[in-house]
Image (cartoon, rainbow, N blue to C red; front, side, top):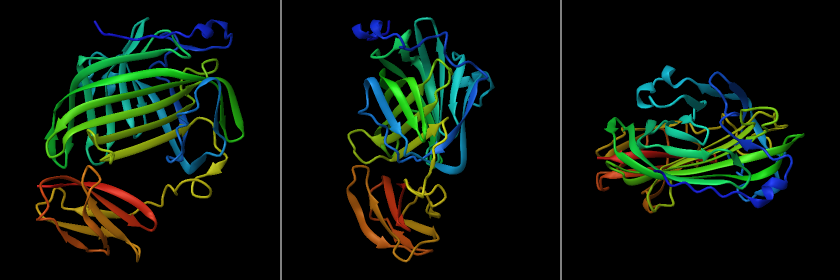
Length: 348
């Protein structure tokens, strides 16, 4: 039997406007929400916790004309249905992650997820050996749940199929209740659900890696079963490293921000370096193709952050010789038009 930790706050009973996540108010298949895509550099306000919390995103910027949807879908209709036959619903954050789950009156359990990532392709985590407990019911302010899970990962790394076994741990909590401010709007009586899980596996050319998901979901249960705000981050890195191979954040709001990203927050949605690096994997030579500024530079670092090749200038058609570099995965870090972009490469 799984070991679960549930800590109930003694003060909770005296709070008349408290909200709880339960099986009865789970989002159901067919529900969806259109969200504004917001500045991915926005802080997650991790330190803002407790009773009467105020999560202030009043200065948050949105990307112009960029919307994303959150869908609760029938797992049997998805491409990866065969991997999640025990699931009864799938929580899909468009172009980011889909979490497969089922529930009882006592808990919501996850059979795994599908993470959309350009370098690794779709990363499919299937917790078939031991499901992940997302939360125990009822789940209210100051409640915490911890659990261990196990299964397999499936993806293709630069054309090389990977299917390692995986294990992991998860901690979820409702770490605050209070008010959420977005733009000129303030929503009272909001609770924040926080989940952090670590999935560990061993991958060819890369070694021991961990997939770390940290996700904050804000709920106004008096008015909606769907989250009204999400701050999600996914990191793939070598175990013990402080330099991620992949680091992606997504911020979504059902409330329209008043600011625009690029005018007063973060970087423009469309102001992304336009280049390609090939071949990948490579046996030695690496080519760069794209539109580069006059001061564009690149450097090669390993998964620990150690510099292998110092900064060198870039133009369209630049080539570098990696024949003396040991086999493995590395990171090409490119600075172009003031924007820093990273791409993983494999040296065979």
